[in-house]
Image (cartoon, rainbow, N blue to C red; front, side):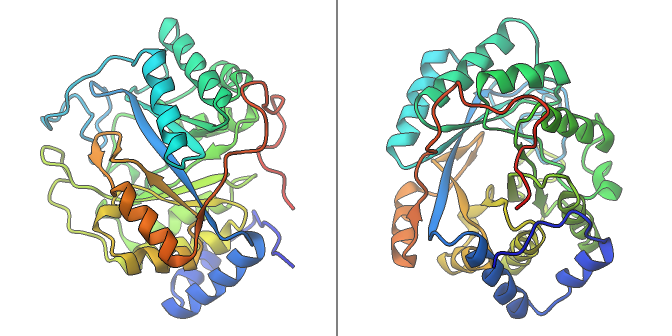
Length: 338
């Protein structure tokens, strides 16, 4: 019988999971994963930058911050037709989720927000899940996105709370949590994860996973990123993360949040096929596909096709639910506990 979702994990319990021998941890995570996710498929998500650069934040890892000289060219909000075309191409290439990223500190009101709503509706009308990440969000904005049919809103916590101000100073952890509250209260599923390789300690990774595991409900989607160091950012010289640390994070996340999609996100180009396979065994069941993730390069699609075929994994199909009209009523749970 699949394990129930728990929301009362203690930090000590999470730390004990993290400290387990890796192969024992992966075995237990794989057992939970197969019980909760019996289909052998991996969801492909494609991420498009719909507004690039010029962000007022100072996230130490991000090449889109206006204060860093990274060579990223500013791009105004894309026209709707361009987003429709990109979403249609993503679907043709096997994606069932289309994610849109806008480099803002706060989601803007006015014509730009209206265009974001139209983008969400257009993606849903194609039969794809629609995810958006565009900065901090008010409750009234979240309600409008829910009405448009948004499948998920991404707002990563990045790291543990104690280390957060070493990464970002232009907003607080509380600001992040407030946006996530607005998203949940509007009935939109939460996509929330973090980044490994920011210079954080093991305890900071445990803090992040503990925070995610005590959300009620759990995030529908948990992206786990590896830092992609970009010249010109404060974190340009960070060393690569040990792939086994990624496997450990995936396995612990799977044990803590059995119902979540655990997504291998940025940094996959540096992973071997064996690293990918171990992550899938440990409970990862989604990848970001496409040649770019916002402004950084990603794994070639042909390589993903070949790897999934060799492992006997299929691409998850598009959602069965209808398009833009299908959304939860505001205030209802994003994903009910089993």
